[in-house]
Image 1 (cartoon, rainbow, N blue to C red):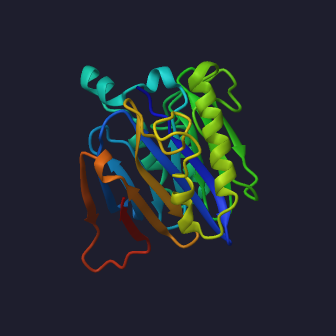
Image 2: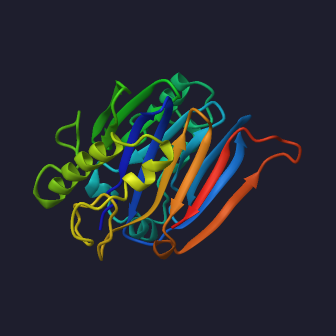
Length: 270
């Protein structure tokens, strides 16, 4: 049981978008948190079971992530139950999206609490409305940072691109990762409205329960939600699949009473 997500970075009609299909082997308990961290307005998806988070801030800086060191990231709910320890990456991402500049957000993604090899693990997109940087890292590999050309969709799944020996490297899982990457690149490149990206990442090219589909629906793994971040217009969109989520707790607002939010939130129950 693995976390085979898809993350996408693309520009649609002059709007810069980050998106993600979030696949899980368990039904998560989700909420959207709208709050202030270190004086910066942020909105992030929060998995109440694992403490996972990803989202954006008022300056249009956003982060999405996909697992890469698959053997370590298998069935995070079981790992947490057995060890009693939550993953630190959710905390690291919340810290990174509290930064006011892309440069500072990248630095925070690479190093947390000044600890060695404390970067966010996996494939990570850290982006502003104009520039996107990909970070590729595992517990066994130092992070590699690359400034991406945003003229075409950038997609990452669960095999290494710059770290060729990370993630899936062979077998059916590697094939699935490669095909899901190509499918996402193909479908996203044809959309003309940023709100269509969620539908594009649900498009099915194979039989309903095939592990090759972008939107997963197998006995062991399924897509529970989609996060779409419009960094240009400061819009956080969540599509969640009601039958694949144990609980959706709605929006948890932790803003001052007289505060005028800069980030809009859209929720679609699927």
